[in-house]
Image (tube, rainbow, N blue to C red):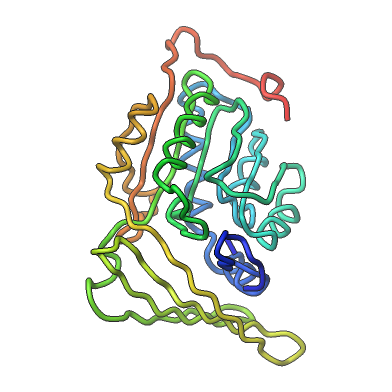
Length: 270
């Protein structure tokens, strides 16, 4: 998701132009690995093609890999800057700017939300109820054998007290992060300062991201109430999830093995 754009009810800014560029340049590994896992799971369920809904699509890394393998992707993200990058990377896919929690989900073979999408508190009104509603809509939209793949922020990435600081550098950019967890409030705050080169000078931008911290059992219960079978994921395509990141693999209505066969994109129009 992505300094400069209001996306939440409280005027919260997530991934504006500069931070979106930084994220796109240096932090796409998780989405790329998740695409590999998702394609393997879909192939095991007999989906050689079909529609995939990518919630919190970011700059389109997952969408581009899936589109290149014969799937059709609908991506949704709160950040207009991220969606603009996604449209450049995966022009054949469809993208919308909007809230993932309130998204309408069309019939599809998979729903993905990679990168702790559901944890961002840009708009925390009725968070638990809206998330439960999203799980129900995802279950109703998935075809038999379909896959729901997502991860969220959990406690433990940073110490329970104090501040952690880190920095990363890339081609034409540097990003500094100051992070802390409040486990009593179940929140993680990250102050992110980016420096992006333009015309031989560096432009400074700052964002503060607040995340809600979940436990695996808490969300697993909500997912099961929506009708899914669910199990934990430890990583994507050989890439372990970061400390304090919780992965979920949920499946909707079962399909019999005899009914499986290659299912074409024509069954799931855009």
